[in-house]
Length: 226
Image (tube, rainbow, N blue to C red; front, side, top):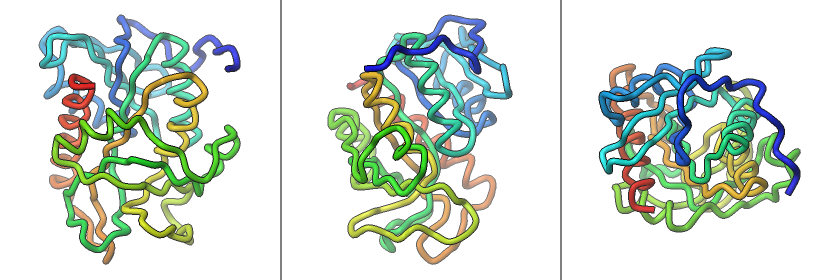
């Protein structure tokens, strides 16, 4: 495994837990910190607008919530630096577009595999299919998420990547995060809320906020169990 570089983009101002939830949106990191962490929560990082927080979770153990920014390259940087600082378990808590027509708006998907149609995971040496931590995936399923493969690609706008058979949903970050996790020995899971269904309908802003809270709670539950 290559030596971990010292952090450049994260500048901790509080203690890091050895387990972390990874939302993309800094605003969602703040919202989750207010519902998942106790009153002892403190800002962990604010450098480059990548807001992060550490506090005590419902199981009584420390938990960090660190935003990764938008897209695989940004997410890969953040997890690389968290791993260098001591994170050993991490769960992406994000949003996705449904590829399976049976997934309703607001449904949760627990990734069992990351299917890489993105540049970041391939640049990191990952194959087309990466298995995610089975215990975390099982704990996420127990929290109400449907398990299955998730496709990651690079473009939010523009031509969609070809959909492999069996893929439930697509996002921008899961495959890149899985690739970093594999390189750094971090146990990794991903739980995604469907905010756009297979027909193109999208949740309103309140619905997206509620979905973001739901994946955060599911992720915290999985880290407590696994």
